[in-house]
Image 1 (cartoon, rainbow, N blue to C red):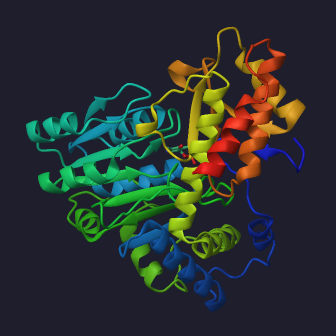
Image 2: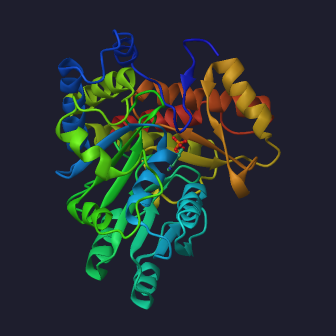
Length: 383
Ligand code: PLP
């Protein structure tokens, strides 16, 4: 891996040097007024990106910690919860809920499909769940679930709605307040385009009420939102030391996101995703999901018959300096995943397609050379 390699995995993504340089600034006292200002600005900017007026908590840790913090505040042992599971990370939400002592019903959705609203509505009508949870974009499939509509269903049934936006926030529209998301979490290393190491969790007033009215404290001491509320109000107070230099990074990446503008950023992601899919299809590759449910942050493509996952990704990385990801669970070795989120641009999309073409040619897969890059260029010029 050289410093010029192109990271096209679904997180971590390429981090802008400006963000990296921000981390090299001196580590301030975590309770200083200077750091409190940076922290407050970061929280305000994150609120704009989450499109919420609720409480936004950036914490040192990864997306998985975000899931634990989100769920551990609103779930008590014995609570009935519905976990919509349409991939690897949907399964993880169910597992975490089980760990918290919840009585978990899983609504299984096949990999490559999105959750069906009538199935969810039926489940919510049958059982008085306390919480329903879903992954917006499951990184194992590249499918975007209909979070807006699921939010309306949850609201109508009076069920708390928890959303994993790890693979969408900052790259796709996620309207936390408007869509009725009570708790939403993400990670720093994907479309927020900062290095890994921070999670961000938002809580609306209903979620905070659910925490307040618990009969048992949350199992997570560090992740108890009640302990963080005074810090969010006055960051010069101490509860647990924030990851000062990671907050600098998040601060800088939020500034970059907001200066691009959310709408413009979502448009860029949509345009590049469309071009990327067009390029793969022009090479004859089959994608895991249909365009109607495809996310704009990553794409999953099946390998043509006879193409080895190990050899393909080795050639991508060693011959072209482009790092893509293998698949997980039942699709391991059968497909590859490409992340196109965060700072991704046209050249990244075209270089990746060119590398895919070269790496497939090496494995004797026959197709029209140059067809993928040409199709993507056409899409970029017309969309
Ligand atoms: N949820 C989704 C959708 C993810 O893609 C990931 C990681 O890739 C996670 C949760 C877990 O995040 P982390 O690996 O940062 O703990």
